[in-house]
Length: 294
Image 1 (cartoon, rainbow, N blue to C red):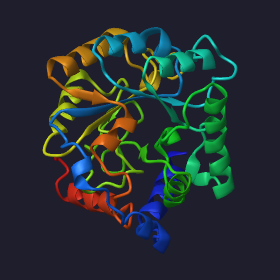
Image 2: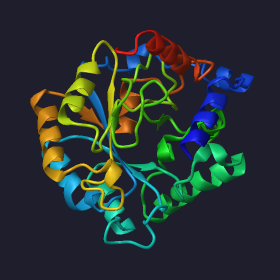
Image 3: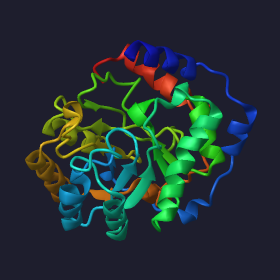
Image 4: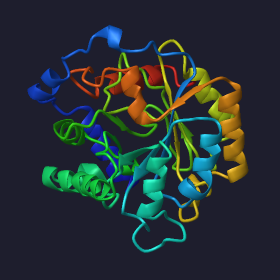
């Protein structure tokens, strides 16, 4: 699986860019309509519909007035294991609490393997389920397993998605148990390839959170990803509840502005981005290969 992903990523990074994709990203919104990006701007996201999203996480982050995005999938154990995964009723409650409900596909597949029609079906299913429960159509997306490709970006653009979050690689090594990643730079990164600055797991400690927040300066944004708190089905992305409370307390004490993915639209023009979505990633990989300690 990992070897296949590396091969897919290599093809993606060096694939030719359709002309229409570059043209679509040429439009710019009036700069006056956007807020200046403050230092310590943090995007907070949660993947996979873990039960802890509703029974623990929501109350902790609401205590601090934080925004957040919960990325919904009916894959993994969602349909069969209601002990470890939320119900749609609980997802509605998260929406009613003011949090964003984002799209994480119907079955949680490796998206680059799918045909265009299959990708669209995965996305439209969650849109339909949200509509059935009175939740607005998702405007942001999270790539399952962090797998992305140029064809995925193009489909998301065609369906009107504004932002999409990828993982920490290829710029940073990812052992699959939590890792550091790049800060999101809206001046460089494509809005449908927003990098994860850190995702929780056994290999991602408190000092890594501090490191991520320190990257959020000079127009760059820290994007955090959590799974279960705890992740009962997937211990490799687990976050201990007490550690999570410490993380959120730190963000508050540091005066961070903590937002949902959708709220990036207040700071970033989602119609603006590089004609070649993967060009900034290739440049960053090349830079880090020459300075691996950076």
